[in-house]
Image 1 (cartoon, rainbow, N blue to C red):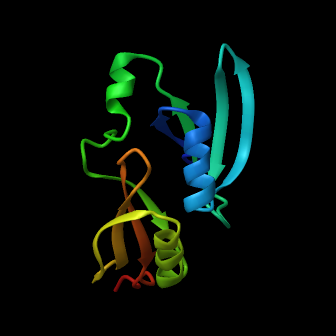
Image 2 (image 1 turned 45 degrees about the horizontal axis):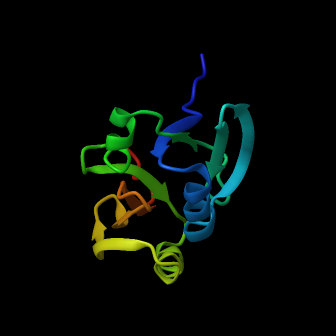
Length: 135
């Protein structure tokens, strides 16, 4: 059996506002933007060079969903954006106005810095260390 997580849903206030941030500041590509009627859209984005998990923008439709925009993980890091060049991407993101919390740091698992999307969801920008072989 083979399975994978195709999309992670991210609650947003507005589709176009979110596309502007993810495609502009993070350089994600719009994979699909299909109208579904009644103002709903199926909007899927992917990081550059990604062949894996994508994000699905889900416009908040009621008070409870609107209250969760930007707090889908209760203030903890919600998503992890892996990169093959941490410093390149960190510089580019900062130049595009992305807000980082604290300075980048080296951890056992790689180089990492916490940033937030336009709604306040926390992400890790992470360049993993090479996987160690098990003894």
